[in-house]
Length: 312
Image 1: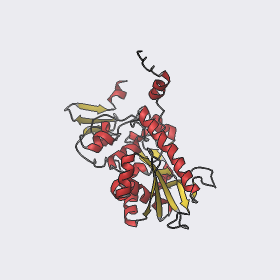
Image 2: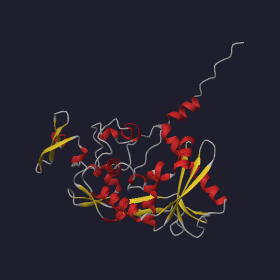
Image 3: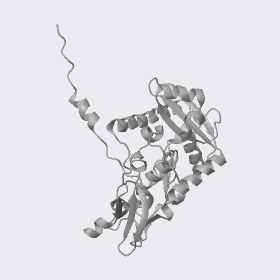
Image 4: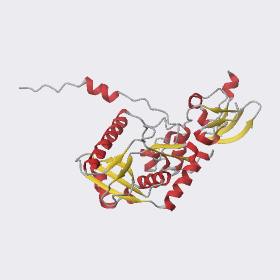
């Protein structure tokens, strides 16, 4: 008897093809402040949007978020107390700083940790593949997850805590591991200075590598098209040279002499001119009367930013 082929599932195809709208982020997050400085700068100017949000990446992120709740339940069942909500506001606990330009919900604050039962710990939760889990258990977070350590140091610095509990699970087997991270004032301070610089600078920070074939750039960076590929980012207020971050997480437009709402920032205006370091070329001229900036691009062509507006 000839077996029939298993019919293709239209339901599975539809789920796999479904994309989720990416919500713009008004402020920097703790995780955005780790890794490559230029990628963090792009994230800040681009609202965290435009990254690789393929459906499979979205679903993988959903699984990781769901497993965080599972890990928190495990900690609670083991006798620890995990706070995730600010009792005064009813909102998620968060770390904030940099005059309101950094705001990052945290996984929680945990007390009752057996090694230090009375000490409050910043909680960071991760769900890892089996190979990554095993490597982390063997070598520790400092060696295998330096971005987690950097995030923990900045988070503790902003929250006034001295310890982090990094709780992680093997998402293939359900195995569990944990590591405590001690506050390091020098490391935390350098992370805070770095984050402040990312907010304040209008110049593109150095790349992690000048080679687009570098592994992190080629396979792990969501901004490689802009950084190495010469693609212009979207036009909106954050990418405009007229706009500057100011106090209380606000932005100010020198061209229109006003503070900008979040909707203003997303929408932009016809007077937009790119922050020069976002353009893949060298600035060679600027006309303040015509409101144009001229660049010589890497391919040898001349491009005038603002010329399209004048032609219209």
